[in-house]
Image (cartoon, rainbow, N blue to C red; front, side, top):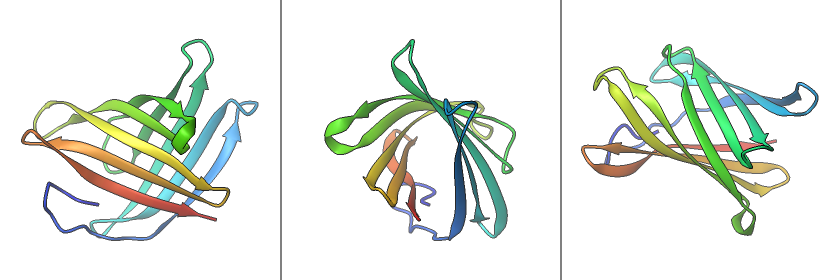
Length: 132
């Protein structure tokens, strides 16, 4: 995790469990680990909206009370869903845009990256490597 552009990353390890729910229509993922020395639990709910022909992702965690909601498209050429979304920044008191990438590396590994903006500069704020 990077707090701002040019910052040194902080590292941590955690676990994630994923399951298809509601007749296989939604992917529920529960992530657990430590963030800045505190226990973190976050839930992701993801689906493909057949009507809109796009993915929707909702993220909630125990570090705050807001939701990060994003919508994305699948790029078959690089096995990536690129999401665009917003989350509320309680310090700045405004919605903050973000971009995230969910990339399938192979049947056992995937990569998640998040990019945010700080003082007009876009930067990578998060990278999670999943493996089973």
